[in-house]
Image (spheres, rainbow, N blue to C red):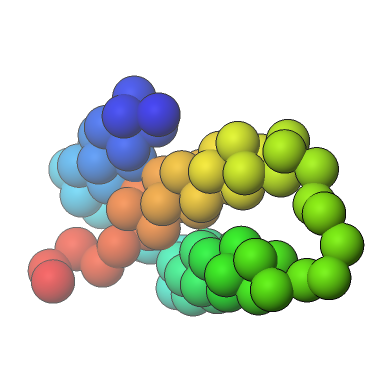
Length: 78
């Protein structure tokens, strides 16, 4: 999982040197995906029926991939 985060930082650094434009839409939607996934995980704790145990690892990978996209499309100067 740390490799995806490092990959996002490397893609950001390479886009900085190549003068590529970061996608504001991909940045914003990945932020929405992170917040939505964390919200659904918190709400799922109060559901009256059991959730499958596979949802936690899948949601972790979704959040890590969204962080990858978020870091890769961060503005050049923060």
